[in-house]
Length: 293
Ligand code: COA
Ligand code: MG
Image (cartoon, rainbow, N blue to C red; front, side):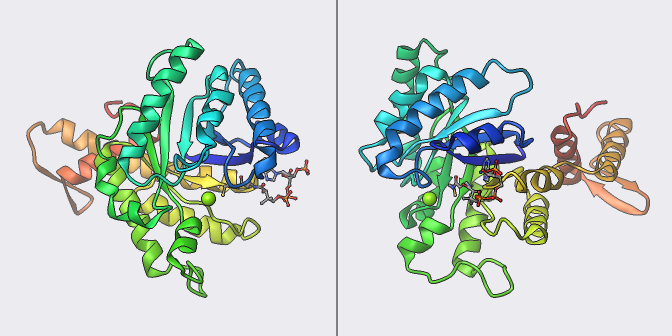
């Protein structure tokens, strides 16, 4: 998934708009963007929307962000939406991989009640929203077979830490938030799940988003959260390998398969060894092509 667009779960207007945004996934939000007295309404609207959107051809993947497991809201969130069979649940503010495991057990029951296939509901966790989780990142590895992706958040983390900013005046992340980002990347890769970069909240700054998404794609993230439809095409473009990258990756794969057993090859005056082959195969996989083609 390249782009995952947040949509407040209680906004008719935004929900209607989101389907045509071009996002690979929508995240119907029941957490921070929905006021406490609107939670019940948001659950019902989210459920009805997912139920009607699921049947559509070529639809985005449909996720629901529930409230944190430390609240008394999350069980009702699951109860409210699971009958529609969302593709997955976004878990905010986990304290460790143990919370992913707990959610997974709750989903076992919810799927059974809703008559859904066991294990079909995936989980994307927003790691790094609470400080202790930054210290517990390794616990996400092997936490649940449902885990599909890991993303990270700076806003809630900075509120807890007491930082007055998460970015330098030039827009780059400050040191504590670079650490959170980088740990998310290493942890997701270690867990064999998608590393997804965080939101870029200045949604009118398209150049800033373009640069940040390009840096994330360069570093190994496979997608990025979005908060506004205008961000979606920029994010999709950043995480789609260019024709030049695809051609180059194809050349590397072809050279290696032409000399089976070779650990190292040369191509246009440069050396390529096994890590380059792995990287090339990744590019082709991301481009949706089988690496052998
Ligand atoms: N999903 C779907 N549609 C959205 C949208 C979103 N995330 N954000 C904006 N839109 C729609 C607006 O409703 C508006 O449509 P309209 O012209 O039919 O009314 C259009 O896109 C243009 O919106 P714009 O006026 O530029 O922005 P706004 O001031 O209405 O909204 C935000 C700005 C930040 C409030 C809005 O983008 C938003 O709610 N984002 C998601 C917030 C969220 O979920 N946060 C939690 C995760 S961090
Ligand atoms: Mg939040």
